[in-house]
Each structure stands twice: as structure tokens, then as C-alpha cells.
Length: 114
Image 1 (cartoon, rainbow, N blue to C red):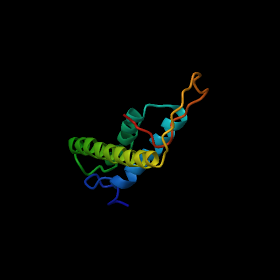
Image 2 (cartoon, one colour; image 1 turned 90 degrees about the vertical axis):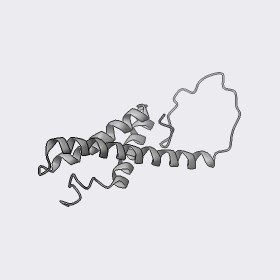
Image 3 (cartoon, rainbow, N blue to C red; image 1 turned 180 degrees about the vertical axis):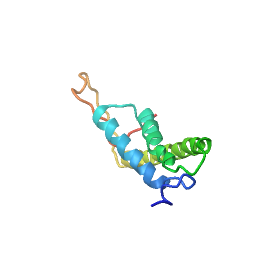
Image 4 (cartoon, rainbow, N blue to C red; image 1 turned 45 degrees about the vertical axis):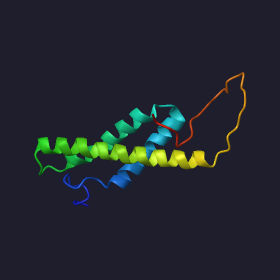
């Protein structure tokens, strides 16, 4: 576990990116938060794990924090983009005219964040 939380070897980007995608997808679909900013905030929260290693100087931990958080964010955006593409590939295009907006419109779990 010490090697997993070592600031020099960041938290596994796949796990952190998937966790960020899961949290962001839930917050966006259930509460309507903006996906891009929510994913960025969650990735920076998960990046805080580098501060658990007290053997590295503070300045170096800050640099690791910024780099790791941006890598986590990029992995999460890539996972979301892939999920949104897969979900939209199987969808049949429908052309309808709506005069009255739906009472409640929720975003799907995988939806474009930008």
C-alpha cells in the first residue's frame, strides 16, 4: 500500500479516472452539475493523495499534485467520451417536433461534458 500512495508513483490513472467518471456522471445526471467543472474538481480532490507522502519536499508534492490531477482529469474525459460515443452509436435518430418542453429532463450518465 505504501508504494500505491507514494507521491512519486501517482495513484493508478485508470482507477482514479474511472472513479472520477463515476462520481461526475452521477452528479451530472442526478443534480445537473456542469460536467466539465465537476470532473475537474473531482480529479483535483483525488489528486490530493500525493500529500500523504511526507518524505518529499512540499514544492515537489505541489508539482506532482498538479500533474497527477490533470492526468486523472484527462483519463476521465477520455472514458466519458468513449462511453458517450458508444451510447450514441446504437441510437436511432428520431425527428420529432415538441411544442411543450418535457417537465423533467435528466442527462444520461454518459453525456458530453463540454
